[in-house]
Length: 75
Image (cartoon, rainbow, N blue to C red):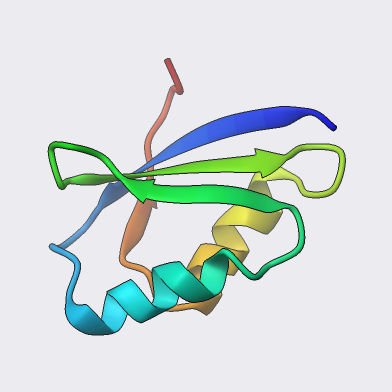
């Protein structure tokens, strides 16, 4: 397993509806962890890179309706 962490900016604050989406993302095969940054303006996503690509992860987040924008470059 190759764990990778990505960081996404939020384009708006998360709502209660979005919280359900975050919980649902955890059920996706290969997604290890999704958490809100302490600053409340970013999502941190840890995933198994041997199972998913960066594009796959972004597609999953968008599928569940999360208001994200990819942050480039990743530190």
